[in-house]
Image (cartoon, rainbow, N blue to C red; front, side, top):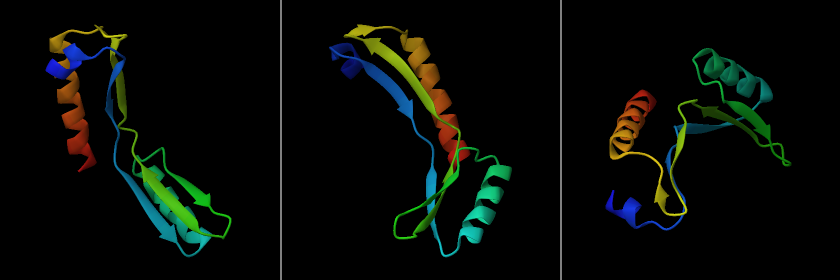
Length: 97
């Protein structure tokens, strides 16, 4: 809170969830893993194929949280709301585990 009060710019409270990158030998392997990930609730998952043929499957959660707290040094939310955000982020972290 002290650092937030001293801020002169924009401050954002941000929580980014777990991401797992898996290098796959075959595209079929990546597709199977992608299906399992999406069916398990990891809806932001995807497959990328690099120029050299490297196939990477990324398992991504949807547990994101990004909330502006201040704008140009002016606090836009209450201390109570920041405490609430910390609790929500901690809960999301538990869900990541």
